[in-house]
Image (cartoon, rainbow, N blue to C red; front, side, top):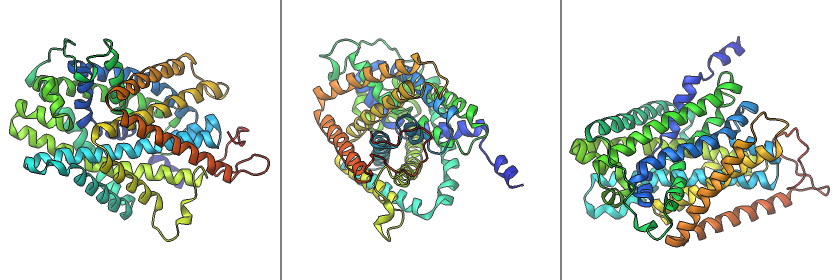
Length: 451
């Protein structure tokens, strides 16, 4: 009887798509629109289409991994299968973890930027303070337990997704299709070869879709996971693409490109005002607040669980050694998110997150292509194309940041080096005389050697 109940309680394909879409259509879209326009001008709606194409190739590897190895481990399980337990898996898993924390910081900052639209201009400098406050609230909610999180997750996801979809379609219907000529050249890319800024901007548009990776964590909770996980990823990306493109076209129809760039931290609220009037701006701000609050709560929950999982797998130091602290993974995650929110503006936070995510994404494709041909049925050419696209986007993005904001690259490089060195030193610390690293997660392949 118990098995029947468990089976009946599992997610259906539609339920999985609903959850996946709710995560993907996150608060990041409220701020990424303006940042992408800053790089590509009036081509920014097209950038979301191109970003979806890149993510489409990228998702192939995750679909194949999910179909072959469905579990609640998601990306960490995929890396473990590809590289075995050790430095490589730990390093790329931590890059994924940090990119998730960066996303929390981005969402928290977005909450501050939109909430400040309700106050006079004299309060403009308090965006990061509001963001920190939201992270503290999210920490408290997470401490209260899963029931509190679950009680609000579905409700806020519906408001967020339906609200953004209505804004997109209504805005498009009222403002009509904007002229997309490609003639506007932003200051950040005016000295670069034609098209270079567009390729670089895809790093940010990809961030709007990266939430699809969380669907891979549903392996233990979805019916027929060997088929439905992959289907859920594909359908979620398609739905998000339609909503993002419609939303971008609506914004382009409501504001000029200079206006979008000027209001890049709250572009959707700025675009709603001339199209819908004052009430439209208030509604957009309200949706943004709901999306950011729910997004930070859910993201801190997911990333802290990822860190706890890595600790249990002995890929990072044991968190149980921190004594009487309740949920040390949650404390560390929240503290890191607060630090990033205080130190960096939204553009830099998004840039660091994009760099970390793309590096991890390349590792996923390479692991599938190089190490799992005998275990997973896939077409090798597709992960190769995904790697080429990721490398092209990452290279262009790094070059633009080198020209316009090298601090982003310095911070990202320091973070990567610190993660790699710390992970390697930790691996060495629990390697036996034969070079084996006893881990918490079982691995069927003979990859227990240090890597």
